[in-house]
Length: 74
Image (cartoon, rainbow, N blue to C red; front, side):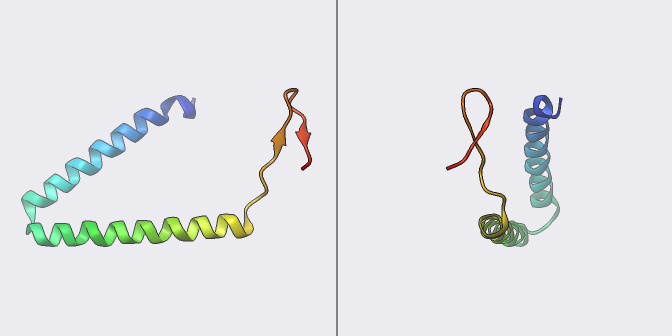
């Protein structure tokens, strides 16, 4: 069920974020909104890099399966 709803949730979040940013442009000074979006994007990129590093360092190894569904050692 969650797999089925994921595209709808992603579309909702995309629409929500776009509308919220448009609201901020109407409500506040445009340069402040752009600065906030840039700072948020930098924070998101840093979080993504940190997650990727920690996933490589401490993540579980990928398990390969044969055609019957049995785990295979490398």
